[in-house]
Amino acid sequence: MPLTCANWLSVLEPRLTEPLFDSGPVRQLHGLARDLPGECLGTLEVRLAADAAPVDLSMRLRTADEAYALAVRLPSSPIGKFLSRWSQLEGPLAPVRSVWLEFDLDRALPGEVPIPVICAKLPKDADPDWLTDTLFPALQGGPLAAGQRALVRACLSALPRSTSLLYVFSLRARGSDAVRLEIFGTNPDQLLDYLQRVAPRALSAAAAVAPFFAGVERLHLSFDVAEEILPRIGIEGSFPRQPPRETCWKDLLTCLLLEGLCSPEKRDALLAWPGYDTFWTAAERWPISQKGPQGVCVRTLSHVKIVCHPDCEPEAKAYLAFGPLDGSSEVAPAS
Image 1 (tube, one colour):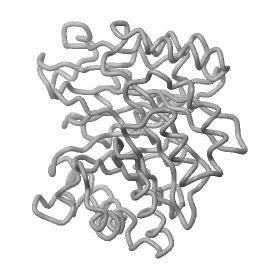
Image 2 (spheres, rainbow, N blue to C red):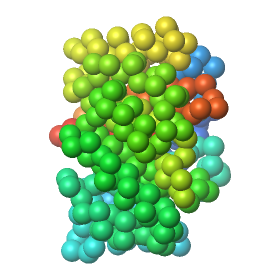
Image 3 (tube, rainbow, N blue to C red):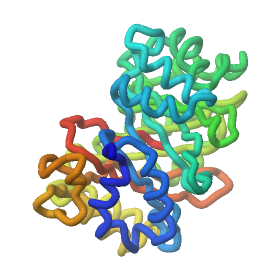
C-alpha cells in the first residue's frame, strides 16, 4: 500500500486528543487522509476557544508528481484542471512555487474527498498581469469580473514598499466568487494604515486585534476581494524558532488567553506540540511497510491567526504542521 497522510496521523495519534481535538473530528481526519499522499507536509487548523472543536486539514504540494496524483482524484473540477496545468513544468503556471489545498471537514461526505480551497504561493515580484490574467483565471475556472480585477490591481498598487503578495486563494470551494490575497512583511501599524486606504470597513475590527501581534517577527494579512473588499480580515503571526526555545510563542498565546480568545489548556497543548517521532519512538504506529525504520515525522507550530469581522467576535486559530522531514522552512498560509 502507498504511504498516505493517514499513516502520519496514526503516528500522531497520542497527541490528537483533548483539549485540541475531539474524537469525532479525528475520525473524520483519518477518513479523509486515507485518500491523500503521505509525502507532503500537512497542517491541522484548530480553534482556540474553550468550546470550539472543528478541525481542518491542509496539504502542501511542491512537485509535479504530487500535483498530478491529486489532479486525477479531482478530474472534473477547476482545481483538478489547475493542478494538471501546474504539473506542466514549462506551462504558464510554472512560476507558482507551491500549492496548498485546504479540506474543510464540515463539507466532507463519507468516502469522498471534498473539493478543497486552493492557495498558490507566488514568486517574488510576481507580474500583476500574469496574476490577474493567467493565475487567477486558472484558480477560479474563468476570468475575474472586470470590477474584481480592477480592485485586485488597486490593492497591489497600494502595497507598502516593504511588503509583498505571498499567497492567493480561490474560495470557489466555499461557494464564493471572492479571491483571497495574503500579504507578508508588514507590521501592526503599517497593516492598519494599509487597511485604512483599501478596506476602511474592516479597520475597526482589525485595530482591536492588531496590537496582539506587536513584536511578532513574521506577520501576514489576508482579506477577500469580490466586487468589493469584504469585511473579513485575517491577521497571523509566527516566529522562526519553535517553543520552548522561542518564548515569544507563549507570550502571544498568553495575550490571547487574557483576551478570552484561547483557553489555558489549549495554550499549553500548543506549546507542547513541537517535536518529532521516528520508528524508535513510535514503533507500534510507524508505517514500517512503506518507510521501513527510516525517516522522521516532525511536528511544528506553524502560526497563530485571528479572524476578525465588524459584526462578530474575533476568533483565534492555530496551525499545527506535521509530516515527513523535508528540509523546507515554508509554513502554512493563512486560510
